[in-house]
Length: 257
Image 1 (cartoon, rainbow, N blue to C red):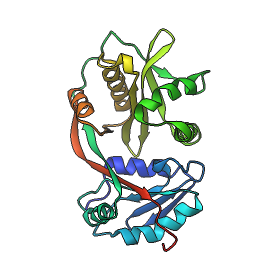
Image 2 (image 1 turned 45 degrees about the vertical axis):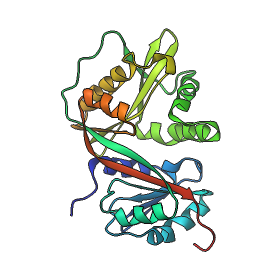
Image 3 (image 1 turned 30 degrees about the vertical axis):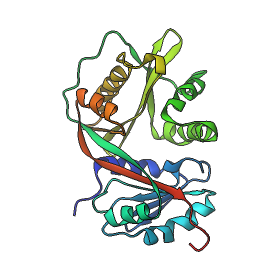
Image 4 (image 1 turned 135 degrees about the horizontal axis):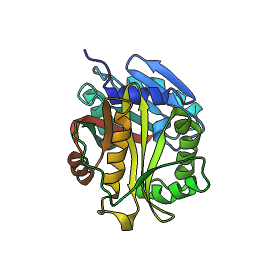
């Protein structure tokens, strides 16, 4: 049996920077009470399904989530085939699913477009987080979750080594993206463009720049895409489909668990 995929190994390394990671035979229970609204910081990470049931996951993760003050159960896996029983259990129990296509850079990278100059952004610079906060609602992150998301970036991911890149029009930030490197893998994250700057090549320029930066450190570069348009875009930029990541969310079960 093969081990976790490269991108799954990277996610596990990022999880290790959170408050608590409890190893399990099937993966890990990850919790951090600083960010109770952020699913990716409080969840069951299933590295190997191997016929795992929802009851088996709940026995470990539900008590840990309650201690962290979390009100939703989030289960995520890069092994949807091995996790079929678990995913079937979650579907029967009414969980809401998200599906992300895992994409691996296979090259060749397109030429950088001279129209846009991509620059590295300094998280310590004045106004950086305010600018980022203006763009992130385009990813569906808003309200109290947005504040916790930004806190997670500042407190955990930037110290881990997450780097941000963007395109400006004068002082205005048109689009951003980020790079995380770990476990010999580069991961392209948080690609977002201002609504009035879409379909002009901003995202393509940012992704191409990040890939070139990542390839100066590692050979393998990945990203996740959740809709057909981004999948086609990333395909044109040298990425190929390389698996599926599945997430499921539901209200935390009652005290019987």
